[in-house]
Every structure is written in C-alpha cells, then in structure tokens.
Length: 400
Image (tube, rainbow, N blue to C red; front, side, top):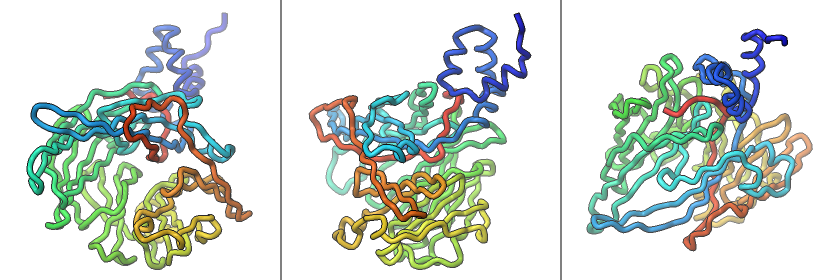
C-alpha cells in the first residue's frame, strides 16, 4: 500500500473545513497529533476561506431576584449565518441548516471576532437602592469557537459603579508577535471627559491599566485590523467632518495612535458607520439626508489611500429616510455587510431585511430574515436583533 508523505498530507488537510478535520482527528493518533499541532492550526487559519457571517440574537427578557439584589437579565440564542447566502434567497429562516448554535444565558452580547474566536460579554445590574445612587455593574466574558463548538468558562470578572455619565467600550484582538489574545476595556466619562483603559491578556485573568485614550469620545464599534483596534472618535457632540478621527490601539505596544479620515468629504451625520469591506477599513455615512456614502482605506493608516467606493441616493436604495420621524432618524443608519463584485449587501436598523444593491444595474432587492422553530419561547418579550462579526473565519484555534 502506498504511503503518502507527511508534507503532502499536511498540504491536503490544511485546506479542508474544520468540520472534516474534527472527524479526521478521531481516526488515528497520528492525525489527531498533526491536526492539534499549533503549527498546523496556524497554517490552516492562514489558508481558510474568509467568511463574513451574520450573527443574530434572539433576546428574551427575564427577571431574577436574590436576597441581596434584583438583576436584569437577557436570555440569548446566538446563531451565525453566511451573508453571501443572502444574495440568492428572498427569505431566510434562522436555525434552518446551521452548523453551530449557542444558547448562553450568561454572555449575551458579541464584542467581536479574531482568528475564528468570538468574544462575548455579560453583565448584571443591581437595581436595588435609591434612585440617583451609583449601582454596581458586574461584567464578565467568555470566548466561543463556533467551528469547534468549544466555549470557555467565564473570565475577566470586574465590578464598576455605573452612572448615566459612564459608558463602557470593549474590544478583542490578537498580538501575533506573542500569540496572545487581548480584551481591551475603555470606560469613558461624558461629564469629566476622561477615559480609563485596561487590558486583559487571555490566560492571565488580571486587568492591567494602560495609557488613556487621547480622543474625547468614541463614536462607533471597533474594527480589528493589522493587530490594532480602531474606532471612530469625535472631540465633542457638535459633529463636523473635521472633528472625526480614527483612534487606534496597537495591541503589540499597547499604545494609541490617531489617523485621519478622507481629505475631501462633506458633512457627516450621526449615523456614521465604521467597518470592514474586502479586507479594508470602511467608513460610511448619510449625506444631507439624501444619500448614502461609502469610503475605503486601501492601505491601513495612510490617509491618501482613502477611496470613495459608492455614493447612492436613499431613493435608489428604496429607503424612506425623508419620511421617517425625528426619533427614528436619530437611530437611523445603514450598515454595509458584504461586497461581491458589483453587488453590495446592506442592513438597515429599521428593517428586518437585508438590502441587496447592484450599482451597475441600479437594482435593489430585499431578503427577509425570519426566526425559525428553534427559538425557545419563554413567554417573555422576545424579539430578533442583528449583530455582526466582521471578517469571521472558521478555525481550529483552541479555547484558552
């Protein structure tokens, strides 16, 4: 019987999906050793096909009462769904045909993904006490690898005394030089205009204080790019184009940098969205309540590499911005999800549908996303919300 060289076996296995590799691990000890080897895990990650997956929460409000406190609680079902499948369907039902599914009562919100690992967070708010008192908020985290179906124990517990002026931002990424995954916590005080930044390296369970954020206020969810965590940030509440910058935290040096947005773009509304399209940082916003604009930073950190990708009217997208009331406009935004050739997939917070726009033909269609039979009805307030893990890729990266 012909025996294949080890190098050839490694090459063949390195391009297979995680589901197949997990089965092969059970066939023999040599295969288990090879597939579990850190060098193979890195090779497989490098060659894995990147996917942009839609994660949907189903949230059911519940209440828990203990002797010492009354806590607010959200029970969550977390389901990933490939965004490219939205292109070929007029309606999608969650829970139908998905390969992995997470129901974790303790961690209810996605922070982000890195190398196939998803960071989630949970919190308890103690509602006992008089109105106006600072109330303790307990935070914790867990890491999930959807492809291997492994979930970590909760870690990184800490308590803060919340107030209306304090806002927490969390982020997740990897320092590749040390193979270390890090959680960053930023507590921003709106009244004092100060920030408190801490870093937790996975496996240490000790929060370290680092330099404060040089910009006054964060405006967006973060983007992980080239071992950095990046946010849109503004100097005050009077938003103008010249006041918005990119605040960037380097996970290797644990220091901050600032990058500028495109030199030539017009006024920006509060609906500015920060993300990733085709492996590049993207910046999108509403212009004069009539158009939606998308820019891409083709070379990370280089202002002159900004390129305007698209400017399309809300009318062409068949979105009724002009007819929405003031309260809905404040929460109105359109988020780019996925780009394939001339087709752009977007999400509008006001719709439970994906908007699919082909700018070459100026055609629009919608894909309705509905919840399937897998949703557990607890009799409480149950609703569907959209969260996104950008540039997600299946991997064998182990849970710490």
